[in-house]
Image 1: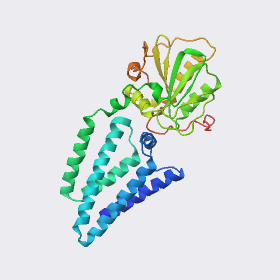
Image 2 (image 1 turned 45 degrees about the horizontal axis):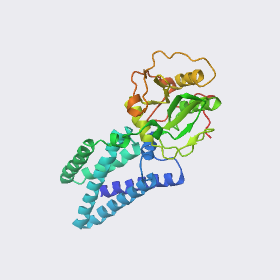
Image 3 (image 1 turned 90 degrees about the vertical axis):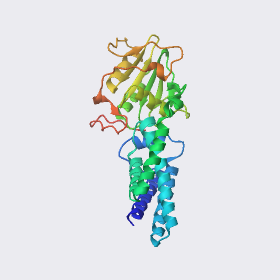
Image 4 (image 1 turned 90 degrees about the horizontal axis):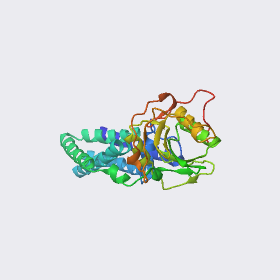
Amino acid sequence: MIRAIIAFLASVLAAAQAFFIYTGGKTICFSNGCAIVDSLTNVSPLYFNIAGFLFFQALFWSLLWGRDGAEHWHKFARLLLLAGLCAEAVLVYFQYAIVTVFCSYCMLIFACIVLLNVLSGPRQIFRGIVLFSAVMVACFSLQFGRAAHAGGSLDQGSMAMVVGEKQEVKLYLFFSSTCAHCEKVIEALQEENNCTVHFNPIERIENFTFPGSRFSAEYNPEINISFLNSLSMKEIPVLVAMELQNTMVLRGEQRIRHYLDETCREKKAVDYSGTSSAAPTASTNVAEIILPGLESQRRDACPVDTECDPLPPGKAVEKE
């Protein structure tokens, strides 16, 4: 009976999540990981949760009807649990190896499926371990990340672009919709900017406006996440500045705004000593501009996988 109760509660959880997504309310999640994972799926999160609701409902009724001694319902329930465990193995690998951010709600659903398998007896546990391990081994033996980004450039991760008068300077701004420091940088760009800027979010953003920008609906946020991971960067905003002779990577609101003030406005340029740089090539791609050795600036940057702490009173950023 306890398995039927767990399956029923899990179906209620999935139904509630689907309802919140449909109505546009706050979803059940404890970090930005859910939004990032959801933005990188081909299927809408709404359909994922509807499927989850139907899955746990099928489990609930199978386990309930199996109480009367109908063994075929128990077998069907065990088969469903093994199928769910295999599906979760792929999703766990996707979060670990591709997105590198875990969705707390997804992990809660995964825990429910694991618990139901454990409560189904030693045989089910053994079968579950074998199948889960087999799927994980198969996933780790393939190169999903490289296949997804083969030939992919930062331009393919750009959601919008604004063309500036300084054609010799090309900027890529990596940001999130929940990062207050990122919004401060974007505000600074709106005040005055002579550079060509590409906006590369780490998630899919529905509403984004910037005066004079060209929007592209075909952008791939996964390219931006992969690029930041290649630099071992866990904080945003990040600015990649491609100049004629070198490429620089700047992290943190203050350093980026200082660079914009000196480079993209009518002011004298300064020397950024200590900033990692590399000579650009004619066909710059993600792999060719990986630059190590950057200092951490936690005071003016936001973690990639969690929401940023609110700014002090008087410094909050208004959203449009």
